[in-house]
Length: 314
Image (tube, rainbow, N blue to C red; front, side):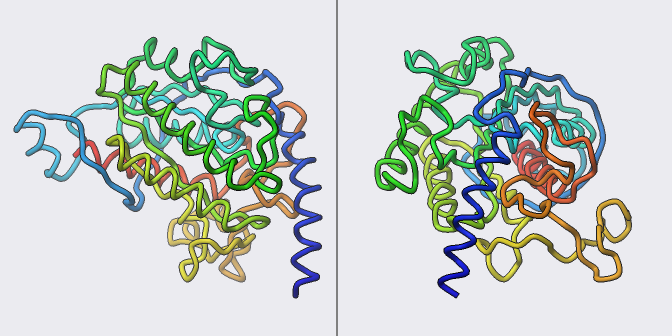
């Protein structure tokens, strides 16, 4: 069993290097902000924190069923996971909440790439730094989805990687989370809320993702942010941090054939074979892009994030 785990680690690291490179990691520069259209429906709630100040009428309306009090303005930032998810998430937010939506993901990035005024090499241009976009767009919510960049693809991490400098990696990641949340809040005049998207299981380093998610949760509690546990929707119910390639189809997936990839077995694929990280079921390409095919994992996560924003609006 130990030998098998070592071979999975070796295969996973090599596969990860190839796949992240194919996706444009570190940053091919082709990822541009996008304004995206309409579409979908419901999901499950997760995570919580104190909301922004509201009038009594708004608080009462939040508890009423039906549509949110107002259509939110949403900004979505992140790495290659956000790159592949951005169209589907935009469709869910627009279709369900009437959201005004903007996305600016860059493959291969981590939190430090979106920090303003660091003076460090970054894969994100100044115009698309988080604070710059918040000042320009004035969103109600900034959704952040980052896997954690454990292998040092971005220059701003200065070679700090999970496998070689573990304690320093987590310290740096927590510090960057604090700085990014503060910059977003400052740029938004204190009214923009950060939504931290929790990640799904990691096939290679399962404890790493558990600890990265804990950093997101702690930061949300400390700064009045929100947590959307999208990663739970792509994990087996019995174990939140066990990686699987396939899961039983949901009722929605069974009713929509494109989302239940193995209907005879009642299973749906979350990942392509040998891609342990991404959820797009289309082959990766040298030019990073939104996922061009229906992919159950992406849809599940988009539903979870949309539901979290919806529950905060009510």
